[in-house]
Amino acid sequence: MRLQDRTAIVTGGASGIGKAIAMRFAAEGAHVIVADIIDDPLEGGAKTVDAILEAGGKAAFRHCDVMQSADLEAAVAEAISIAGKLDIMVNNAAARCPKPMHETTEEDWDRVVGVNAKGVFLGCRAAIRQMLTQDIRNEVRGRIVNLSSQHGMVRAPNAFAYGVGKASVVYMTKQIAGDYAEQGIVCNAVAPGKILTGKTGAPIAPKAIEYSHARTPWPRLGKPSDVANAALFLASDEASYITGENLMVDGGWMAN
Image (cartoon, rainbow, N blue to C red; front, side, top):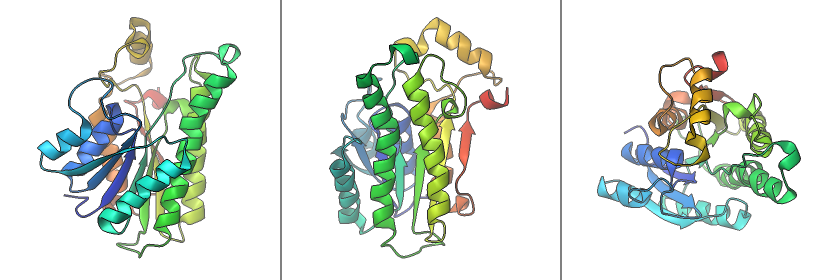
């Protein structure tokens, strides 16, 4: 129960990696606010909140568009109403656009960068504003875990806007860690490699899977639980002297 009595917000927590993180945090004792624009998992199955409650955990759903600062501030306010504090902010919500630069429209750019960069900025800002008002507990006022990607450090083939957005997350994580360490705010990122979430379509097309296996030394591709375990570590008291890091969960992709 590494997150006993902690309150956490997980954006994009209805599906995929976000769902896995929310459920892992709840299993470790956190009261989780699942902040998403939908509550039905994209890959099917039980809703995140329902699954957590069924397992005996604590969770609530809040409609949240991460491109709207008011929605994120409302999610933080809900955390305060529950426990009087926000211990953990996970900025997981993401958008994709599998297009090279010359085919990327302004609308594509605004949507993808709006979620992947602006959404993380707004989530971090809302969390930090609250965390700065909180007392220090075990050296820390609050923890932020951002979801980046290996494609924030190397090119995202034919996905220009996505790569730029994720590169922004890598940078923001370092800047926030340095700017707010003295105030007791820890900020790290998890960078997943190829994760099979159960979603269908282009991400699991044979060509995409072949490419991912070619880049990944480990014999299998990733599972949402691999990322959730890393996020749990960074959200726990075990990671107090780790800040500004971009933890690869990629089966060796970036080492290959």
